[in-house]
Image (tube, rainbow, N blue to C red):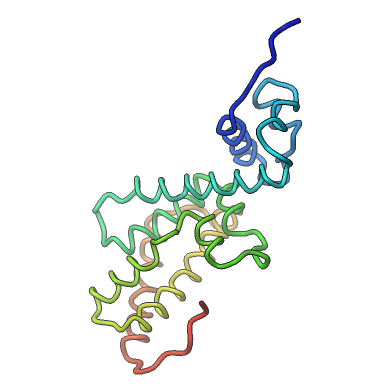
Length: 199
């Protein structure tokens, strides 16, 4: 009788990530992961309780990959805040299925902190707010307001790139981010009070 093949949890999650990369979360099932591993489905359930747990682990791994890519793509060739936005859009282009998994899914049942952690953003927003405040002399409320609207704008572009609605054109996207940022700076720099920002 041949020995049982064992895969650790990380190998199974990585296989799941590879499957999701090619076909999105819809393609993620026990048979597809077993095929990716060159195995039967049995080893999956020795390490993970069920497919829902595996989907959660794959989302977390996708978020961690997103965070690593953002860090790797910070080259210092443009202002840090803009460079982060451009890296976000590059991820939408290069990892379209994972971008959709992270940013274009229904998250209404998730707590805000869990959403942030699953996207690889844990602790990032405070640094972003500080950078905006330092660069523009803004209050925290102004920085949050500008960042929220900038994020909405970038999310829209990212969704269009990931779904191939618009091409990934770095020169165009760079100009678009600059134009939006400058417009929002003029808007929020002039305001004395802001509308409340969602928690």
